[in-house]
Length: 262
Image 1 (spheres, rainbow, N blue to C red):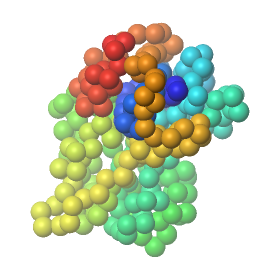
Image 2 (image 1 turned 135 degrees about the vertical axis):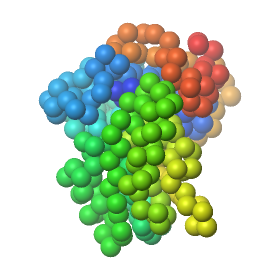
Image 3 (image 1 turned 180 degrees about the horizontal axis):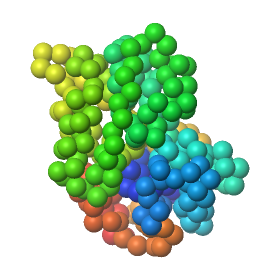
Image 4 (image 1 turned 180 degrees about the vertical axis):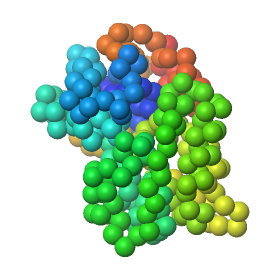
């Protein structure tokens, strides 16, 4: 089987690694847009155009499903992407894991990009799934870019700034941007308070990977007859190798180690 993932940058690594864990035999197509990122400041029309181009580059490789591993693209472009590609290619969007976080009780913090924080989309999810729960929306300006470029100093500074805005008694943090999942343990270390129960982090990678398998009718586990899994990397439509910064993260290294094409 073949699963494609798309994002503006390397935020798709977390979901790609989750797919690889569920189906070690799956070929992966990673399609991103370094020429056009960041997508967040773009108008909805402009962002949708970039997302369609990235999705169609992935679709040309005839995947069994496409994961939109980007919260921003899922908010603004998911209906258009589904209209263009379905039913031939199932399209799976990424939604912040507010529902499972709220199910564990509050207080809950939602870390997200400034464009998503306070947006009608995020407020709608809070109203639907976290009614009666104490929720703090925490904007994280610059964190996604710092992760994208593996800027260690900027990662530390932006995480520290967001942690300072996070109530000390939170029980769970929703990682509302796929890039944040690549530095999840650094976020945990910055927010966890001495003497309090272990902080629970809620990302979306595992859920979207599982949903991709459900949409294709596949089950977890490798096909023993399958060939070694392949990895195709598309950067603004160009077929290239995995970006060097991707190897800074455990998810990127895992993909490189399990794909002979690299």
